[in-house]
Length: 171
Image: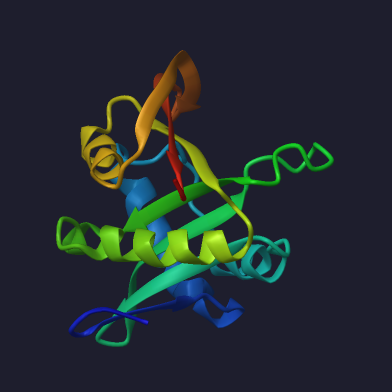
């Protein structure tokens, strides 16, 4: 699927592990956009992609033959029987050199459509309260803030407040 000239979006395969790890580790190294603080090896990313549950997926965005962004969609809860089957969670990771160019919005459009096809009706996710870029991105996509948790994550030894957001995928 095409997002804009020169950019394509598709489902990730295990062979995309190096590109996904490069983007993810770049975001982690930046130290301010993610709740993650531990880098991942290519082998760990490959194993993660290979083990994705049936209703999970990763979309990758490529430009000039290189992965520049990716988005994960997973069931929000795997410990219930079926009460939360309609709710997914989503993570978005964009290479610093490609932010604010519509890449994230194109990824979201593709992921929202794919999530609907898998029976999801809502995306519920979290983000760092100090990541105003991410908050602005999500609000522009139609997410609303539903709550916050103080000192909810510990990133690089520092307590981080977390905002919880949701977006309904249909009506």
